[in-house]
Length: 561
Image (cartoon, rainbow, N blue to C red):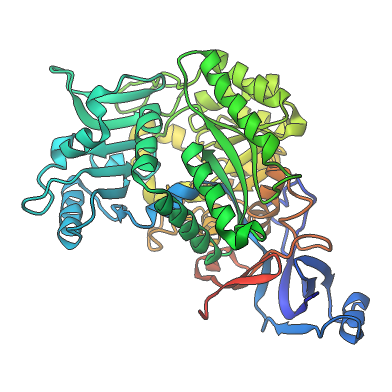
C-alpha cells in the first residue's frame, strides 16, 4: 500500500551544482520549503503551493497524506561517507580509546585501568594510538605488566590511522608473529641484535597479518554485530550510505550474512554500501592481479543491477603510509631525520593492477598521502585508467601545486577527509616536514578550482565519523576535536559550506557512479535524507544536531528515541 508523506516549513537543501561539479567557495545554499515522498521515492521538491503537492493533498485515490512540520529545521540529502571501513568501524566501538592520551605513561595508565575494570574479556583491544604520543618508539615490553595480577592477556593497540599495530608479549604469541615472514611494503619491527619480533607491525605487515587475525578471532556473530553497530552509529549522525574502502573476505562474508538475516533478504541493510576490494602488495604481478580477478568475480555477482545497495565497484591500493609514522612517500627527506620512505608500490607494480581493473570496468582508488606518491599515482591513473570509470585518489594530504592542477584537469576524484586536517592532530607536522611543506597541506581549494570532483569521507574509524564536524573542519580549517585550539591549517584552501555539504552527499554518489539514485533531493531520487537543527554559518556547524535520519522513505533514527 502506497504511503505518501509531505514535509513542510523547513529549509530543504537544493544542490547548487550538476553531478561531478563543485559549487565553489562563495556559492550560498539554496532551499525549497516542501518535500513530497511516496514510499521510497521523492515525488516533488518545491513549495506547498506547487501543483504536485496540492494534487496529492486533494486526491482520494491514495491513502491520506501524512504531513510533517519541520519547524524551520533543515532537511539535507542523506550523507554518504566517501571513505570508511565498515566492519572495523563497528569493532572499534567496543575498543578502548587511547585518543585522549598524550604520552606512553598515559597509555599505560589507561590500559591498566581498563584491564582492572574488565577482567573477563579475552583480549584487550585498543585504538587511537598516535606515534607522536610515543616519540621514542615502543616495544611489547611497554605493554607487559599492565594486566591485573594473575592474568596475562594479549593486548593489541591500533594506531589512529590503522597503518600500524603494537602488542605485548602475550599478543606476539597469540598472533603467532614469531613465525611471520617479511612482506613487500611492510615492516615487522625486530630487535637489532637478536632479530626477535618486538611487537610493532607497520603498513603491509599490519594489513597482511594483523587485520586477518582480528577477523579470525572474532566470531561470525561478533562480525555481524559489528556491522550492525556501525550502521546504527551512522544513522545517528545522518548517514544513509557509505563507501567501504578496504573490503576483504572476512568483512564481505559478514556483510552478506547480515543481508541474509535482514528481513529475510527482502529489505536488506538500511545503508547503501559500495565497496572497493583491497589489493595487498604481493610477491609479484601475478599475485597482485589475482586479487583483482577476485574483485572482478564478485562484481559480476554484486553490482548496480543485481544488488544496487551492496555492490563491489572497484579496487583499492594503499600506495604509501602516513606522515605521522614517516611512511608517506615524499619527494624530499623528512625534516627531522633525513629519511625517505621506500614506496609501498612502484609505478611498475601498479600498472598491471590498474590496467586489469580498468579493462574489466572496475573503478580504481589509490591511497596517496605524500607528494611523491601522489605524483606516481597520477602518472599511472592518467596513463591507464579511463576517465569514464571515475578513478580516484584517496587522502591527498601533501600535494604539489602542479599535481593539484593535474588531478583537476584529468577529472580524477579527490577523495578527501577534512577530519584528518584537524589542527589538533597535526602538531608534529612542522617537526616532521618543516614549515615550508606544511603550507601545502590539504589543498582542497586547489583541487576543486582545477575541476577535480570532490567526495568527502571520514576514514572511520581512524577519525570521527560524523559528517557535519567533517564539513566544519573542511570549511573553517579549525579543530573540531579541541574547539578552543585557535590554530588554523592553511585557511586559503577551505571549502564553502554549500560546496562541502554537496561533496559529502552528491559528490560521493557521483564518485561511485550512483548519482542518478542518491545524493540529491530531486524528483525520482531515493527518499534518503536527514533532518538537522543547524545554522548555515561555517563557524556554527559544530553545534548542529541531527534530529532524524530517513532511509528509503522510512525513519530509521530519531534523537527523541
